[in-house]
Length: 171
Figure 1 (cartoon, rainbow, N blue to C red):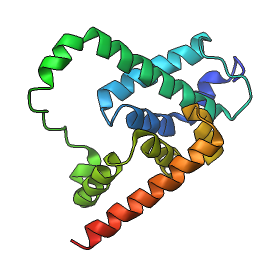
Figure 2: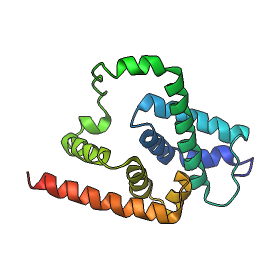
Figure 3: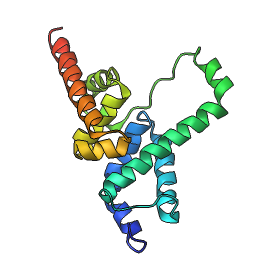
């Protein structure tokens, strides 16, 4: 991204960047906002540089993913002892999302539960292709894996999701 238009380009892709940040942060809104803020700072300050090998959107999605991983590692180290203690405590109820407040809340929840049954790589690949509308090749770039691996995760994820949907329909 050339220096002059970086803010405008980032503003144009903000909605999809926020959706990707949510996916990278396990749909934790506060964490996603922090990750996105840090990613914007990296881009604007030049700590993350666009090299032109992919689209600006694909490049920024990779920045968001790497930032989310960095923050997750930081939190794991920082909160190691507390985290081990908390794992024994029951998880708090999630804050209702706008989707949960809509008439389709039950469908969204069932689909989210099914997506959580996929491997993280399958879930990330499907999210990028379906929700962010990018190609499998660009998803591979964002995830830092080969195109062949991305295709495998994509196909296996779709097959597993199809199986789960079929099983849910038979209940």
